[in-house]
Amino acid sequence: MYPEFSVRVGQALGNERLRRNIRRTMDGLIEKRRQAFPDSQELTVLRRLGKLIRGQALANLPDLLLELETNCERNGIRVHWAETAAEANAIVLDLLRRHGAEMVIKGKSMVSEEMGLNHYLEAQGIQAVETDLGEFILQLAGERPSHIIAPAIHKDRREIAALFAAHYPEHPYTEDIEGLTAIARRIMREHFGQAVAGLSGVNFAVAETGTLCLVENEGNGRLCTTAPDIHIAVCGIEKVIARLDQLPPLLTLLTRSATGQPITTYVNLISGPRREGELDGPREVHLVLLDNGRSRIHQDSQLKATLRCIRCGACMNHCPVYTRLSGHAYGTVYPGPIGSILEPQLQGLDHLGELADASSLCGACGEACPVRIPLPGLLRRLRAEGVMGLEKSRVLGRGSRRKPLHRLVWTLWRQANASPALYRLMTVLATRLRRLIPTRLGPWSRTRVAPEIASRSLHELARADGFSRD
Image (cartoon, rainbow, N blue to C red; front, side):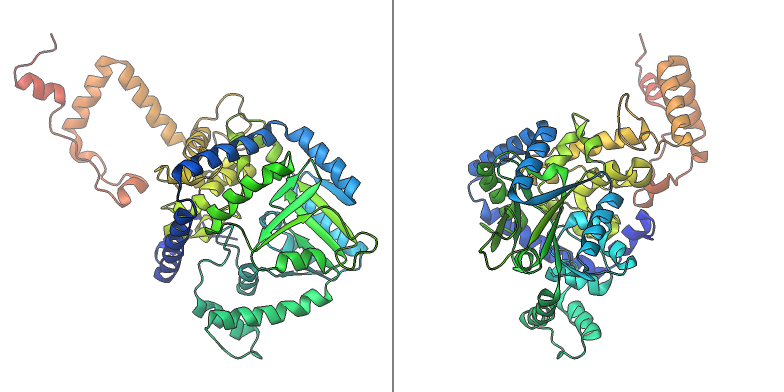
């Protein structure tokens, strides 16, 4: 169980090593992205196109999902629908047991993190082995990803070397990055040769052709999806796009915004299992389409923009809050600005409404988003939902963050400002009894000096200078 948000924030702010690691890496990613888009006009056009492509997909989501299912099934990909994470886990478990798999090798997948798949399979006696280097490091450390693109971004090479030495003492100790990568590669190769089943995420699912697109840099994703006999892909329902020709601009935005690369080392387009006469590839491909609250978000005309996200991590890289806390302070699968709007909608404002407050509303996230999600506006909407609960809203836990004391204070404020006589009385009392007003005003005054009430009101000062209300 993760500690309270305020406790996690305090722990992150007090960890100088963590902050130094995150700051150094974020600065590097920001600079790489800037260099990847030297032409600001080209970036503007690309962002507009990305927004339109993702917006079109969401506007036609039910039809596109049915088209995707039809074309995947025609290609030999078996499609499974899961309304909840529990249902998705059960589908994956059933597939693994039917094939007698005691281990599954995993490519990087944030949806599997959302499902809590590793812990679930472990409880069922099935080993889930992360093969992405960052995820592999975190599996050794027993931690969640800190970033959706670079999961172990918060760790430096000395911490990683210590982890490897503790878990694999048979390998020589090294702090050299290439040496550490070589150790991980040797360990992974054994798993790739033994696994019956592989699991991956999906970056985009193309409805027109029934194609699953995965991007990666290490090659582990390609091995996970081709070496074992069964490939299971888990995917949020919002990842569907209409046509194959829409893929190139989205890939350009994704890879350049995420890591500053023109394109990732590997772009995998999967359109079915091994055909007759082919020498490699899985004998079965399964696609698990997960809802888990996305349909509810989709029904809100404003909040639906949340689902445009292409999981590039640019909003986190540019966020002044994330770069001081790192992902673990959020205590959720999806951290940073996108997590602050997605997680409260998935799990409810009564559980995670405080994440919407973890923002300075500086607008950096909205400026960085390659598909122009209005992140600051959505944060404000969720803050309003937390304390008011807007009419006809379907947001879980709406109104749950409005406390009785807050309600009383704002009721008094409204009444005082609606009545001139009461306003003057409150002003006189505030000035005359100013010494009795507390100087500790909750979290606001922890880092600020509480305002001092003047000895006389503005009206009194004006009258003393010869001004009258007439």
